[in-house]
Image (cartoon, rainbow, N blue to C red; front, side, top):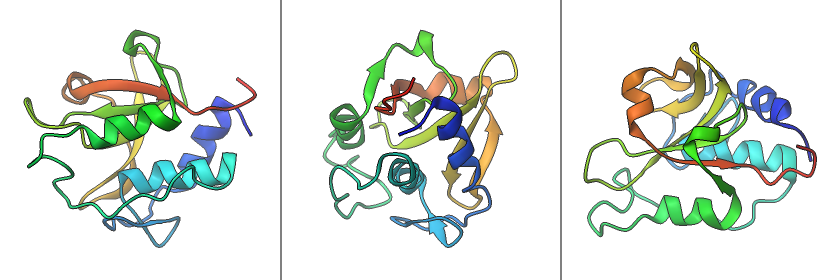
Length: 147
């Protein structure tokens, strides 16, 4: 259990973790889903389901929103207009493709930032710039008891 501040604190503990596809081990390797999984484990305990193997293109060939569907099973969906620190944001990287990138909002307002695992960079905290904001298609919160 925890708070929104705890989500951001735990996510920041992952900064500097190298990018490793399908991994979720702080300090050793993580991808964007692995970061969310790791924060979940630290705050909520066991993961609610085992992540199946997935390719770098996720489910693009099939056109299935697998990541979005999984997020709605385990996280609490909310309007993008109500994004808060500690929320999980879901991105569509290209128009017409499936949503396949996740991050955690760490700062709100005009200087908004988010934490994510990014190929070639590892787990980083970046400005939530206009190009990133345009790609957001979903917003979710962790099911924390203390809010």
